[in-house]
Amino acid sequence: MNMRKLSFHFRRLCLSAMLLSISGCGDGGSQPAASNLMRWEKHDAVLNNAVAWQQEDVDKRWVTFVLLTDRPVPPGLLAETNVLDPARLNREDQVAEKTGAQALVFQVMTGGIPVPAGKTTQRGFDVWYHDGDKLGNSMLSGSGGIDIESLTADRIKGRAIHGLATDKDDMWSVSFDIPIMRGNAARMAAEGEALGKDGGQPGKDLIAALDAMRKKDYATLKNYASPELATPLNDGAKREDTLEFLQRLAGDSQQIVNGLRNGDKASVYWVKKWKDTKVRNSRCTDSIVLVDGKWRSTLSNCAAE
Image (cartoon, rainbow, N blue to C red; front, side):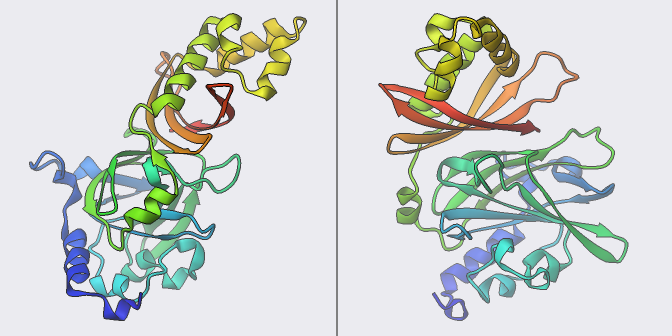
């Protein structure tokens, strides 16, 4: 699509997204300005502006990008190009840079799953922050979380979080409910089936495995073990050590956030919770495969909120 010929409908959509005050979306009322606070490198800003769009990322996945800023983004900046992925652009060509905004940008796949950068990492957030008269730029990977409440080709609603409000250096908690530009339902569906907030059957089987890990229940756990895990579990000499390790790994409870299925493979995004308030919860994405009628986690990537 030639974005210089962007239809009037999309221009209106673009403008309405950027003028939207995201702090009040969801309940229709006003909230304190600090409700969408971002702190980065000890510099505070309130991210009450947001835009979202869909496009292919550098790995050819069809994903949704969300840009949260402390300044409205002029519509012309988004109408000039359909390539807005920070990974494809020089720094001076990025929207936040042109706006001079303290900002976050992140991307999610169908189902609200954070986009991975590799087999063991999540791409995370690109961050811009005010540093006097200058605009600093950095990236946060393997930390924070993205809670997507709903995602269609037309609209995305959710929250981006990192750290705690009491953190002195870096944190944010920003809610948004905004239209999506250039959304494509067919391209989204081609990426897989969104499993919803319980993660579907892959999520249920993951919870069964986690419960068995916490109880050191070998009889149950072997029914959900991946081929890689089955080997140490079946070794009687190593089994007790393996069960103790898995028990420590499982956390005290969990909350499934979202899931995505593509054939006999799935991804489940979840929160690992601990009773000890001094221990921060972790955000985990498990790669899960269907083997003998059970969904089994083959890789779990976790990092602190």
